[in-house]
Length: 240
Image (cartoon, helix red, strand yellow):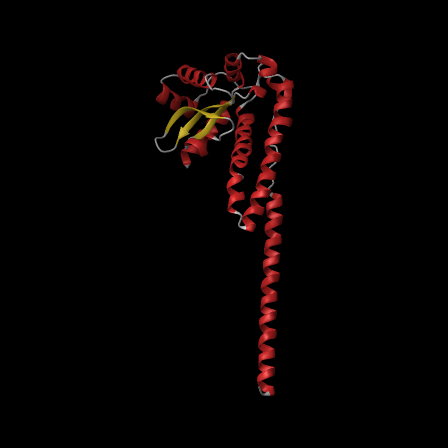
């Protein structure tokens, strides 16, 4: 090779190395930014809008404290752990690990989703009957509020083991439905129904106060039902 050729190729290689280096730097910056974004998106316990004892006598302060600080917090922590493992598995292209993490994601993710709705569905000044569009929708789909309540109570009490009873909205038919889910299965991901009002019948939600008398607990929930929150969820579901 002539000297001019060597100089040409040297400059070309240097330029290529410089370009590659810039690409790596940009990728590293983007990866770091993504990592920071993921760190900011860690799941946390939602703030309660009332004190632990505010729902008494229907739900005791001891149950609320245990339920929120221990059980819901465990779902949040385990969901974050599962998502970290999922990110690592995806980065490594480990499909077996991705698949093996699905039960933990479903259980802990569902637990976080369900409980977040549950706290908002309750209010110390709640109870009574809903009004406005929610009440009209209930009448359209169940004839009366009492009939809807009876169906929801019966379905929820009848759950074998642990699970949730739900009043949900079917976005396809535009109708309300009573449904149940086992364990912490999230309603929308499981059935396609949009969750409006949920009743937790895991024993940790009521056993310290109601022992094994689940019907008393399920009926008592309606005394602190936050129908304003349920109405807002219905309005939002209708827009989707």
